[in-house]
Image (cartoon, rainbow, N blue to C red; front, side):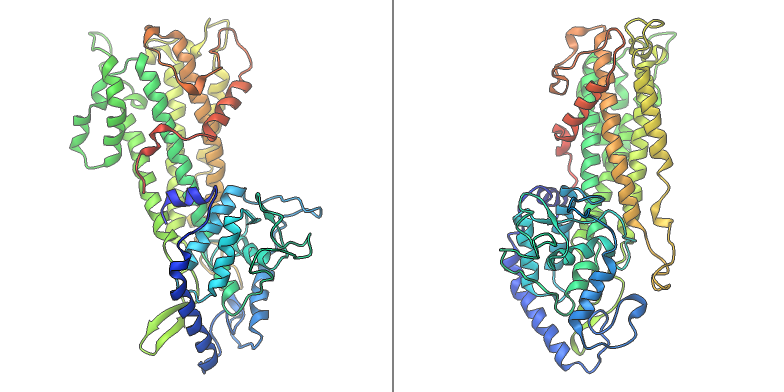
Length: 501
C-alpha cells in the first residue's frame, strides 16, 4: 500500500485483492486451530491469557478473553445518549484507519479468519465506517483504545458513520444488520488482532503527509504567481547553482520556480543590496528541505503500512509454525516521523510569517507599500492578517515539542516505555488545520500585492482568486479568508505531482 492508495481509500472504495490472499489466510487459520488443539502449552498470549500485566495464567474460555479485551479498552464516549457522534475521528480519517488495518491483516501472520477480514472490507465498500475515538493510544501495544472500537462495532455495540451507516449493527437498532457476516463474535486471537496494531497512528500520519504536501505545493503555485510580476534575483533559483549539493528537494524547487523568476529577474544596481534576504534567496533550500522531509516521512509511513503490527504473530520455527510474542506493535519509527513532520510544518509556518513581513515591508520588497495598504498612515492594510500569522506561527512552534520523548509508564508497569506517536499525530492535525488558515493569509497577501505591481500587465489570472477583490479601503476580510480556506482544503494543487510514493 502506498500513500496514494491510502488517500483513495479514505474517500471511497475497498480492497479488490483480498481473494488472492485468501489461501494464505485460510491456511494460517487452519494452522492456528491445529495449534490450539495440539499445543501442550496453554499460555499463548492473548489467546489463553489475559492482557498486559494479566498475562500470567491460562483460561479456557477463549471467546470471553477476546471480549474482555474489547470491553476493557472501549472507555472513550464517542456517542451521546441520543446516538450523536462526538469526540471522534472524522469520516475520512476513520476510513483511512480501517483501510490500513485491513491491509495490515491481509499480509498474513495474525492468524485471523478470512471471513473477519472480508467483513471489514465490506464495511469499507459500503461506507459503513465504525466511529473511532481520537484519544487513548500510546502507540505501543498497538493503538489500543481507538482500534478497540473496530471489534466493538462488529459486535453491534457501537455505531457507524458514512453513507451506509444504517446498514451496520448498532446499539440503536438492536444489533441488527443485513450485511453478510453479521452477527459476528470474535474467535481465538481475532479481537487482539483487530486492536493490537499501529494502523491508527500510521494512517493519520499518512493523511497528514499528503495534506502538508498540498500546503507546500500551493505555496509554490503562489510564488509562481507572485514572481510573474515581482522581481527577485534569479541566480538563487538557477538549477545549476543547486547541482553542487546532493539533496533532491532544493533542485526540485529550483526547477519549478526558475522559469518564472528568470523571466523577470531583478537587476544588480550600485548602492543597492545585490542579494535578497533569506526568506527569498533561500526558498529552494527552505522549501526544498521540507520537500525532502515529506518524502522521507512518507517512506516511513509506507514501510509501516506494509508491515504486520500485531502480537503474538505466527512464525516459522524449527518446530513448525507457532506463535511468538514480541513488540511488533511498537510504533517508534512512526512516532519519530510524526515529530519530524511537525517540525517541518513549523519551519514552513516560520517561513510564511517571514515572507509576509517581506511583502509588508517596502524596504525589503522595494515595490509594495507598507502593510500592502492603499494609503499607509490612513489605512492599516493587511496588518490584521500579519497579527494572525504571528499568532498561528507562535502556536505551532509552542506545540512542536516532540511527542516521542513523552513516555510515561502505565498498565501496571507492563508498558514501562512507550513512543506516544498518537499524541503527535493529534497535534499534527491541529497544525494542518492552522496551516490552511495561514496559507489563505499568504494567498490573499500575495493577491493584494498584485494591486501595486509596477507591471500590471504581467499579473496572471489565478482561479483561486475568482470573485475575490483586493482591498482599497480597510474592510473586514473574514469572508475572503474563509472562502480561500474552503477552496484550498477542498482542492489539490497542480504541483502535487511532486513524487512521494
